[in-house]
Figure (tube, rainbow, N blue to C red):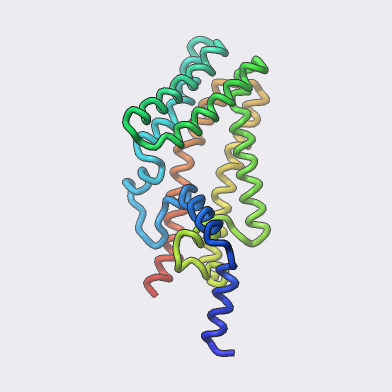
Length: 243
């Protein structure tokens, strides 16, 4: 078999025959993911990281509802006011986006999540149940990532495949595979750490401490892991592209 045939065979293995519409849908999903906002091979910058997290508006929309819950619950110890306030804040973000004619999808998802969390807390009458939905989401992400690692298909590598043409050989390139594996394990560690810290506080009914931990383990930890992922991907993909 010629080298060209071998190369074609490898390409077939790396790029399975997928319907174009399905591939485009997967690529779009990859671009919307955390890793989809980084550029393998490029040096990370603070402005690029901020943009990857939705800019200043994205940060405010991520932090303010949780902060509103913490402040109001700390002051009043009142369940209804504490869980309704974040919903009002999230609705305000939707209105602001409609008025400014900017995409509202992320804000609508935020309202849905905050409203469901508030509903759970109001149904049970327990302020700490405002965080149940977050536990479920973190657990599902953790399971998906762990499964991808066990299956030797680290999620970061799969996402990179849809973002960068040169990433197609990541499973054959030991350096790229190792980077994808380490980066994927880092994301698993993020979700595992959140659960390890927050679940004991939930069962202890330490609502204020739980709300504080959720804020600290939210955007700051996310930004840190995203930054490290970017640096790791640059070591492999930057080396490959410059070779």
